[in-house]
Image (tube, rainbow, N blue to C red; front, side, top):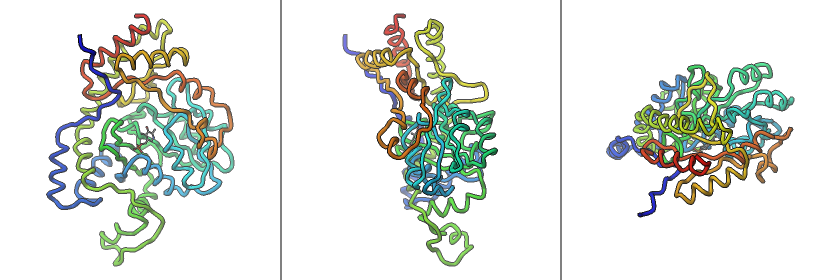
Length: 380
Ligand SMILES: *Cc1c(COP(=O)(O)O)cnc(C)c1O
């Protein structure tokens, strides 16, 4: 009997029209950014996420950097964010000379804890960056109340949350600015890629300037000014047309990708109910106000040792099941550049016990094998 096929953690989806659109873009001889396909992606995002403006970027990292530029983070400013996130959420703050202030997450959703935000606010606090972990939106009602009371901006790191909703409103439309990723590990992909959504119309004009290297190219193209010149700081945040062409095909297939992922997510969730009841693991919690996009399925094992044992056993079976996040407050750069006003007990605890299971659009029957192996290793 041959060894069973490996089950990777992720395999980027192809939905059908990617090659056709790239070939069409080649035919148009329009390879730099802001062409036909970029504008089509902008229109899709604005319509589907119900935001006035959306701009493609090279990555979510770039979208976060744009957001930090647009809200004018400056040296000495403090920005509150979870420690349980990817490095880009914090780097965007540090690159402006501001200080990321790391706070704890809620043990249910692993999203930023509203009470912890309130406790970390100082006269220097300027903004809150929420992360919608696993495509489940953060506790926006409570966060909006805190932000309004203290005059803080809310920025969404919605890297994992394309087509997720909070009380029926799309992620990316819940703060002043939203940052998305189309990295190959996300639901909808373009290899590397991202987008910035702009819900505060006061930021829209400057967003185009920052996006186009600090120039007024957009006003020039619209005939509003007769010279195209340097008017503000900025960078080259726009991707080329080939990436946008690939991405448009993916966006058009986004609902199908999410439906496929939710099928797998629901299969895992049903399969592990009995193990949860016996206290052998804990499954993800999705609050009733959140509509999620099946981005990620994780298990919380009772102890770090049990997590490490299960991860190693699955690896020996050829199943790739990684952990998630060395908490940023405990990472070398996090200690150097950030501030952690209170111990992050939940973050330290869950990051040591969390295991992510393979989940991608065409996982097929491999999901049954993952379920069977997890059950077997946990004595079922
Ligand atoms: C993936 C991810 C990012 C980074 O996205 P890139 O497009 O690779 O820059 C940022 N934040 C979170 C929460 C992510 O999951």
